[in-house]
Length: 181
Length: 349
Image 1 (spheres, each protein chain N blue to C red):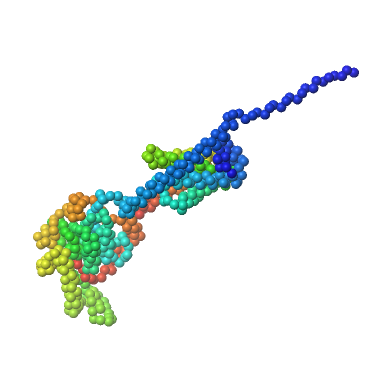
Image 2 (cartoon, rainbow over the protein chains, first blue to last red; image 1 turned 90 degrees about the vertical axis):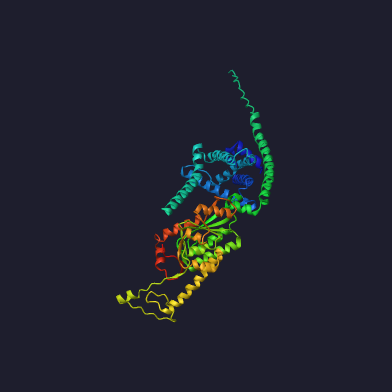
């Protein structure tokens, strides 16, 4: 399988790719996306010495990203199924991996950030937004839903994680106040 | 019959297939071309980034380990050098718990050792406000100061607050310099053993206590009966020995002749100003004066940076402990269970 051809199809005719591609092609493309995307994120973080070096460190980051996306795909699929849309969770997981190809933009931006021309957080956010838009586009086609519903479904897992973190933080503050008082 | 020629209308020729327009044909190949260019650029960027990472790692490895440790602990340069302040407040006793946030003599000794071991600490100030305490506990702190001085060579300054008598003075005598307020109460160099006798009260209410013991001195100091002359003589021997240890320590620490110390060590108290006249203290001043002196002795100058002897985690555990021990009931229980003991303590306050 030619990765360039596959990605070109995803870019030019995403609906055709989703309808045509079997489990093998989608899976292979998705995992390549995860690998290349994670490598880009890892190298970006290494430029700023934000993560330790080594293969094990990379594998740790890869495991975290795969785990997070697995959770996201599950939550999104559950939400969409509950709201009446039909699709395939595993295919969604691999399509999320395909969108991770956009993280390749992070490396040249990382160079510019290291030289001080750009802000590294802004670079990261820019790539993140591009990735989100790509995910909305693919999810919309896979589940045959509107753009707004796709955005809502995509927000669900992020909202859950943010809400859980906020609750833990608030509980921590309340606990400390109770200790002092 | 005429033949009618029905004209046969030929079937319309099928429309020629539309050939794909130039835009549709070039779009997929354009995308592939761009993707190939991006892939090549990505490979180059990746190789360049590995070179940058190797250079950054090389710089990090060439830094000395001390600097790395400093980064971990939040210190980055010599301007963070400081004078450590260790408070010694209240009566000095050994606690009966091993909790690190307790303020017993073991914990104070540990803090002295830890402060002296810190690189950024150039001098140690003991902020003393105590009437003294048990002999063992006071000597534990004294030993910790002497050991820290011998191992690190760092200067110790003692600062007297309201009261720094008896055991408080014992501890301060190990320091290189003593500063007291003019009105500080100090002195009371001596030993005390106090035991109460409820024999008279028990006789009145008809209470009798039976004791079975292996030796005649086994229940010495018992509140159930009066002290015998033999017991008194024995305890006096203990007192004299502890007293001798006290005056020897003061003589060594203050570099005064033993005879001179003994003339001052009859248990009387002095004000700070009187103590200055007797050479029991070196200067009169307040906490800021003591800090300035410690800073100058530690070569940091006046008004040095202060490192307080406070561990936020210990404070948090102390708060939790106080919450869980039913509002200090445990400390009341400890106080009620206190038994007679030898003390370097002034009971005037």
